[in-house]
Amino acid sequence: MPEDLLKAAKVDGATAWQRFTRITLPLMKPAILVALLFRTLDSFRIFDNIYILTAGANKTGSVSILGYDNLFNALNLGIGSTISILIFICVAIIAVIFILGFGTAAPGSDLGRR
Image (cartoon, rainbow, N blue to C red; front, side, top):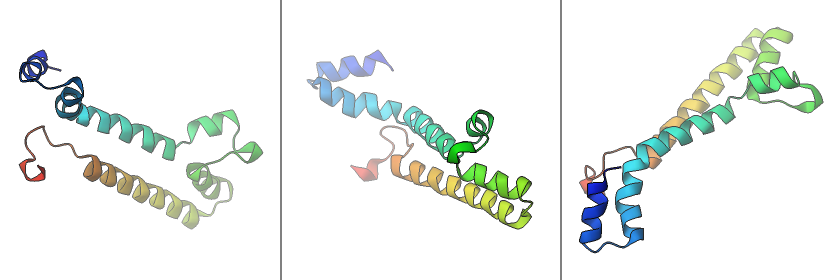
């Protein structure tokens, strides 16, 4: 974060809240988006922890475990493949919603939204 921007805003009379909301937060928006997107998608597609720790015992599972069980254990190739494709589509939809909703434009470049 460039200190020059914060100092200039302070000289112009901006309060701490205004500096945070109009300078710090917009500059950190792309980094926050990436972190939020990765954490959300990792929680949606979790497989390895559940499989290694419990292998699906005690009714622990996720959609990835469901797809694995159908594909490899029950040999339902069509249903397992369909579940995998649906997981991919859901992950893509979530990513698009996050990117459109959160936005990644550089500060000052979205003049139409003011």
